[in-house]
Length: 323
Image (tube, rainbow, N blue to C red; front, side):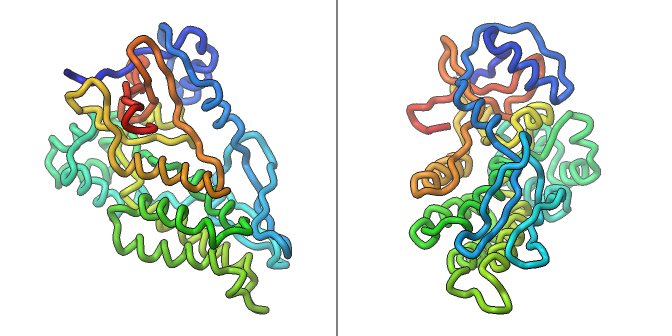
């Protein structure tokens, strides 16, 4: 049986859906019943742009400064080397040739998981890479290279970890998450684990010439750049849906599956469960995907389901996975 995609958002969530979709410049279609989980949507609304600071007792203290998520990479210390200030940049490694080659390799090695990836697969590997490299495919198909775990959440999670007084006790859960973020990139994974250990051991390794805050800042910036260059955290999906999901999880599902429910890929399951593990040891609380349910069952919004005439939802089986 062919797995289903949700056609329309819910009637009692029309205003939320209108805001959601208008942000991507997409007209809102007619609506039919689908219940949003208000608590999960509130998770996204509560995410704040932050200014990261450090004092003698607490490294990288978070302080809310606004009502929207800002791209802050790279973080940096101020002139006193005791606080961390944000910038407006981001790594943008997904536009580089090595990352795009790895994304195409993944599609041809592990199979196409949605209609857009199927188009690329049908071109043959050489042409698919050329179309992606020259942006022809993305622009012609309203497609995007989508993060499974947003870089906003990566940065916030690492900053929170650096600020924890229990970094040693919480290390294993953060390492598990790093391993999923770099699952298909063994060399990158080794470097990222080393950098995570630098954060864990920052207080011990601080010197008069390099404070714990500076050690953490260097490690966080390098980690963000390496993770943003890892194909493990990317897939090809619909640009409008990806934009509307913003910093929430945009998990990779096999929307080409012949089952009624779309199964999540192992990396997406691993990433979500690892973030739950981080939260369980006092780390940054996880973000939930945009969820819904109706008579058919449970739905999750994801870029792989597309965004044509209100699509963007996959029917999922939450008895086997949390996503």
